[in-house]
Structure formats: structure tokens, C-alpha cells
Amino acid sequence: MATETNDAAIAKALAHHAAHEGDYLEELMALVRIPSISFNEGFDPAIVKQSAEATCALMRKIGLHNVEVLEAQSTHPYAYGEWLNAPGRPTLLLYAHHDVQPIGERSRWGSPPFEPTVREGPSANGKREPRLFGRGAADDKAGIIVHIAAIDSWLKSHGALPVNVKLLIEGEEEAGSANLGTVLNKHRAKLSCDAMVLTDTQNFDTGLPSITTALRGIVTVQVEVSTISQSLHSGMWGGPVPDAAMALSKILARLANDDGSIAIPGIYDGVRAPTADEKRSYAALPITDALFRDQARLKSGVALLGKKSPTEMTWRQPSLAVNAIQASSRQGAANKLVEVAWARVGIRTVPDMDNARVEKLLTEALKKDPPWGAHVEVRSEGTGSWWYTDGQAPAFKAAMKALQGGYGVEPVYTGCGGSIPFVETFSKALGNVPALLIGVEDPYSNAHSEDESLHLGDFAKAAKSAIRFYAEVVRAG
Image (cartoon, helix red, strand yellow):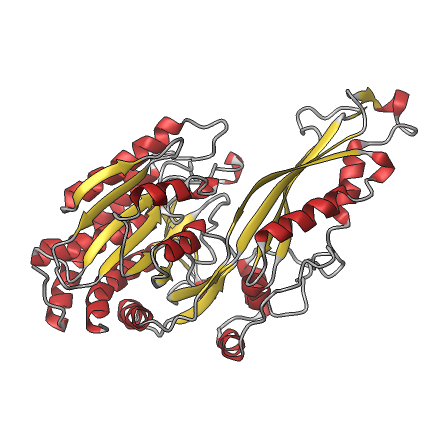
């Protein structure tokens, strides 16, 4: 029942999309209104399930088969649907996630986080263009609708797809995909495929489509420092009694050198250097230090760190960040010595770093020679694997052609400083199938931050590229 893949067939599917762009935007806005925060503490898991069910409803609406909510143990639910009526044609596993991050500081949002709002926002070259603001609008509910829109456009215009598709929408990506292995073991046969397409990464700039070929991994720990068994009046006891917050500050400060590099002995051992081709590719990208500073919202006078280019530093070098720190709170601040100080510390890892070794080195560095004999406890929070591909499989060439047709400009290969645990885990488990990471976000999306937004022009172009890709991957063989 597979449909044709000629230019006329593609044009017919694209025409359907053009006539229904407003409908797809409305479907995205409906998903954004569901506050599907997957963090385990302080948020209602029933809402994440509601989001999974809403995603399944969309799958049924466009004609996918065997639609179901996938759960395993304490997993936040995944949504799954398939269309497998193209015998002899490739099978694509299409991925996105429906869970979202917490909103952060409400006062920093220009509109309510879960009331999707279209207004002008930043774009390339200092322009201001229409964007959809809302938590999850870009990361990653737009990814869901890109897949939905492309599948729907083929099925409505032709009654069939050029390829077989399996659509998997994760429900715990933002919480670290802790149960990913369990889901994979339970549903391995169901998820078998010839290639994966993950719509959860960032284009290099608005209007410039990008295929991500490298992801950093992550190692996170929590460190707790204590010096006293209960808080004390800082006037009565301050001086001879060590301050736990100060002890923690000293510990954290010694993790980094003045140039921002990680000051843990041995941490850079085994880091794979970029190839000559990668370095040439990075050098050819339309980026300057000034543009990078602008995209990063770096304040005037604050230095860029590192001895390499910002792109290489972000994509192919490890980095360390103190994600959170607490010794009291602004509301609870008082003239006292706190009994405990806490921080969450993360290291982004790159090829060929071993995450277990990185966690061991980080833990040892945090515990070594504690200031004033303070008690230091370190607890592992988890790790996620880095991932790397050379992008030589035929599916990549098909994606490059589809993206050029969808965006009207030549695509680029890039890296990504973030982590998507799904990629390495599933690619290996499914026989090292090609994994194409094709994004909808851009440097101004503010994913994970306040005022998250989606560039509406790129949203449409991403769906048009996906429509083209289903045909191009058949042509590529």
C-alpha cells in the first residue's frame, strides 16, 4: 500500500500541510496547555499521564494503528502508535517527548507558561518574528506535532505513507529517562526499525536547519556539607564555629580553573579530539564570538571561557556546572550559621569519557581535604551517555536533501552540548541503527528557561522537511 515518492506525490502532501498549518498550531497549543512536568517531587504524575493520553488521541485522529500508552514499573507514560502498511519499505522510529521542565521563576515569563501565546520574539540577525511562547512549546511538544503533521499530510493526501513509521513519544525525558532501559527491554520487538528520527535538538540558528551528530553525556551528583548539628546564632557563635556554606563554597571553587576548565586531575584523559573534517565544519559555520555572546544572553563585560572556539567548547569539550546551591533561602535568610549546605553538580561528558570514572573522580574531588574538617556526603544522581556518529549512512543524505527542500537553504552538521539518553541506549539496543537528530528549537528558544518559545516559521519548515524526508529516505535506498 506504499505510496509514490515522486515530486508530484511530495507536492500533494505539502499542499495538504499548507492548507492545515493553523490546525497543527492549534494542536500544539492544546498540548502546551497540559503542564506535564515529569519531575518526581512536587508535581502530579497524573498530569503527565493526561499528556500521554492526549498524545495518543492525536495519533488515533490522524490514523495511526495500535495506539497505546506504554508503562513499565514507575515510568511516566510513553505514547506509541504505528503505521506499517508499506511492505518492503524502510521502517522509521520517530521520537519526541511530551514531558516538560518546571517553569522556573514565574515573574520572568512574559505570558503564563501554560497559556500558549503568539507574540514577536528574537530571531536571526536581530530580527523580531512570530514565536509561540509557553513551556514545552519548543522542547519538545513541537517535535510531536512535526511528526503528527507530516504523517497526517501523507495519509490525508494519499491514504498511505511512503515508509513504515513507529511513533514513540517519551514521558520522562526531562526527568532523566530513568526507566528507559526497562521500557526498551519490555518493548524491544515493537520498536525495531531501520533508522531513528529524533526531533528534540536545536538548529544552529533560525532558518538554518541542522543535523546533530554529537551529544554530550552527563554525570550529576549531590553534595551536602555540614559542620554543626543545628543552626546557630551567627553573632553568638560565628568566628570559632566553621560556616557550612563557606566550606561548601570553598569545595566548589576548587573544581574550576580561572579559564573555566575543570580542575579535577585526570578528568580530560581519554577525551577524543575532533577530526580535521569536524574542525573545518565548525570553522565554516556562521558564528562569531559576538553572535555567540548575544545568543547566550551574556552580560556586558563577562568573559567567554576556554581556549577553543565556543562551538568546540560546547559540543566536544567537557564542562562543569553547579546547577543548584542551597544553604537557606531568600525568604528564610537570617543571621545564623546554617547546619547544612547543599549543591547539585553536573559534568557534561564527551567522546570517549567513561561516565563511571568521571563520577568517581568528581566524588573524590568533592570529598578530598574538606575545609575545617567539615563532614561531606556525596550522592550519585545518575548519568547519561554521550553519543557520536559520522553521519555517513544513506539516511543522512536523504535528510540533508529533505531539509534543504523544506528550509530553502543548505543544512549543516552540528554538535549539541545537551544530552538525550534515549539516543545511545536505543541505537545500540536496536542494532546500531542510524539516528538522525533533527531539531525545531533555535538559540533563542530558551528551552529549560523562562519564556520558552518556538519560532513559527521554523515550525512549519520542520514539518515540510519531515514530509520530504519520508520520500527521500525511500529514494536513498
